[in-house]
Amino acid sequence: MRNPSSSSSFSFAAAQPQQRQPVAPAAAEKNAALLSEFGREMQAGLARRPRSISPKYFYDAAGSQLFDRICELPEYYPTRTELRILGECAGEIAAQVGPGAEIVEFGAGSLTKVRLLLDALEAPRRYLPIDISGEHLAAAAERLRADYPQLAVQPIAADYTMPLVLPAPLAGAGKRVGFFPGSTIGNFEPDEALAFLQLAARMLRGGGLLIGVDLVKDPGRLHAAYNDAQGVTAAFNLNLLRRANAELDANFDLEGFAHAAFYNAPKQRIEMHLVSRRDQIVSLNGERFAFEEGETIHTEYSHKFTVEGLRALAVKAGFRPGAVWTDPERLFSVHWLGA
Image 1 (cartoon, helix red, strand yellow):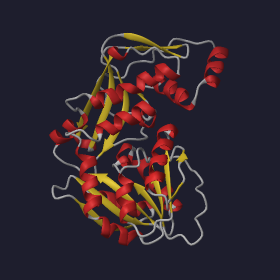
Image 2 (cartoon, rainbow, N blue to C red):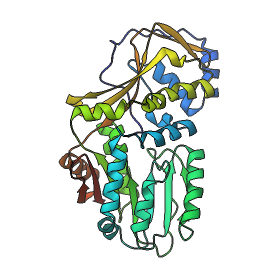
Image 3 (cartoon, one colour):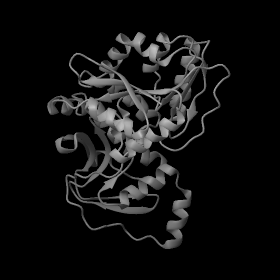
Image 4 (spheres, rainbow, N blue to C red):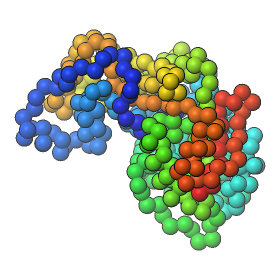
């Protein structure tokens, strides 16, 4: 469902001339130096038009917990459908992966889906989960170690969209296989998706990538999945502003913004925004940003794919498309890509 993106091509309000309040150069330089990466990107995202922030910043501890709740919602079909595919096709998937594998999971989260894979594999040697939320990852990795005492579990707190050096393979290990479930590939712009897959193909050379991909379907079903009746997705979206208040000396009024998600059919993607309910001014680390009523902060894309479209993208990135597994309704797909 989630991770990096850039500004949206569709907005609820027309782009307005920049309305930032000036900050003295020396003060601005000092403020920028004090900000975290999240702070710098948030400040830049509020300054640009249309406004946007990468969805990777959804995933502090509270955001990660909210996403776990989203995955259990009746409207949110991707998680249970992908789990069903992984469970029913585990033997065929294990045959592709082979014995003694090292599994690298990109955007690992709660380490739930990988358990189905680990249970099916023949003597997996090591598991390397990568996630930006280090606290959440460490707790999940500790639980996994307890349940799989023979497996080396080595969590890596990092942004997996950036180049990183993985530990050298263990002596005698089998293939190094990437695991990228949840259709997180859909959170990238098309050029970013290609760049990530190219990076993964180099990192996994000689092995492969097991990737979950959400498929194009009825817009009504998509709308319901991102606008759940319990409001959990709305809380997840608004948690980004709560996090900014807690970490960046911001003063977002959470009652002053609304969650909005819709399907952009020509682009085959869900777009998620935070919409200003009124004219208001928000400060962040001493800098002021004016919002008009209806103006948005774009927070996420979730592109949907056809099976053929994903396979063509994989070839362009340097993979060799292999087996594809889907559910009976063809809501979701899991692909084996040889590296």
